[in-house]
Every structure is written in C-alpha cells, then in structure tokens.
Image 1 (cartoon, rainbow, N blue to C red):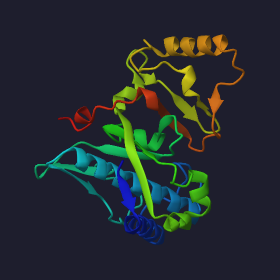
Image 2 (image 1 turned 120 degrees about the horizontal axis):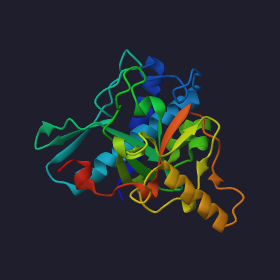
Image 3 (image 1 turned 180 degrees about the vertical axis):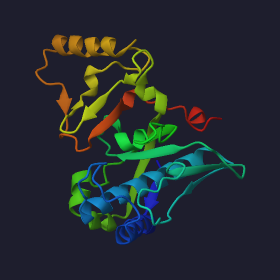
Image 4 (image 1 turned 120 degrees about the vertical axis):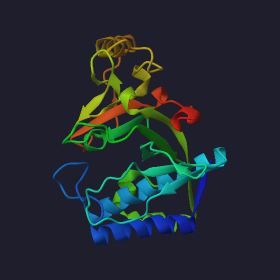
Length: 254
C-alpha cells in the first residue's frame, strides 16, 4: 500500500493554504451557492491532493514507463478546469485521458461524483472520462474531523491508502434508460451496499434494479436500507464500490 510521508503531507497542506489565500479554487460548498469555511476548504483540498498523490505512487509502482503528473499550480480563475486531476505520461507522451481522483474513508461503500464534476453545467458534456476511487487507511482523519480541524493532518507521520476501483463516465448511466443508475439529492442518504446487486452487469435497467432492491429489503425484513449522514451536494451521481472495475490496464487504456 503506498505511503505518503510527513513532508509530503506538509506539501499538500501548504497547497491548500495557498489556494485559500489566492482564492485559486472554488470557495463554494459542493457546487451550491454556500461558501465553505476556511477549515472545510482546507480539508477538501488536502484530501484531494493526498488522494492524487496516492494514485500517483501506486500507478508508478505498478507500471514502468508511466509517470503521473500532479497539478500544484494556482489559477487566477477559481473555476479553472484542466484536463482532469492528473496527467498520465507514458514513454514521455501525455495521454488525453481525463481522470477525476476521489479520496474516501476506509469505511466508504460508494464512489460519489457531484453534478458539476460529472457534467459541464453549460454544455452538458462529461467533465471526466473516468473516475477513480482511492481509499485512505484508518490513520486518516475522518472528513468531519478534518473539516473541524485541518491542522490535525500535520500531526501524522504518514498517510497510506490504495486505489480500490474505477468507473467510466458512461458506467454511471443506464444505457436503456439514458439516466443515472443512482442519483442522490441534497438531504438524501446512501443505500447500504448489502441491498444492491454484486455487479454492474446484473440489472437490465433501472426498474429491474429498483425491483431487486425492494425484493431484498422485504426478504431481510429491513426497516431502513440507508446509511451515513444526509448529503450536502445538490445532486450526486453514485456508483457502489463493489461495482467498480479493478482492471488498471483498462483504466490507462493500455
């Protein structure tokens, strides 16, 4: 499992601080009109950079001839979007592949993508080709804890984690319905993975999926199938972790 050193943690923290000072990243809370506090902003930036760094380390360990470039630049336009979170360099040539790297706790059951990071809200075009989920190990502070005190990250000697899977932009959408398999509005909660099919290939369409969930709920005599806190983003597109691909060759389009 890749490990991020104390000095690398400090680099990610310094990036977050400078981004706050320069307003080089959006201050809005999960694509809403609400402004993030300084603590929440720093926590989100730190988690994002740590996840990208873990992705870089794991991919470069697995593949010779591949380098992963991370963007630590600060932009005047806080809505600046580049060609994904990272750039894949293979044999000296940059790949056009746009990757969105998501960091999560070791207990997470879902890969979530906020609406504004899934579709361009003006053109409707995809914001990334593929979404990658990196799980932090249990030494990483929880998101609520880090948002309360982002400086706590500086007390750690290291942070570790690993890639647990990925999904194409199109995997989130039912081909038959031309609609997301799972979308969660603000205030809604996630579904426990035990009530979901094991693989993405099982459900034929969204109706089939919902029938499966309801049938399993009835068979387990469950009074509630939901987990976790209510979501903050206006709209999240979701993919259960157990539906994610672990084929790294396909991830890199090799």
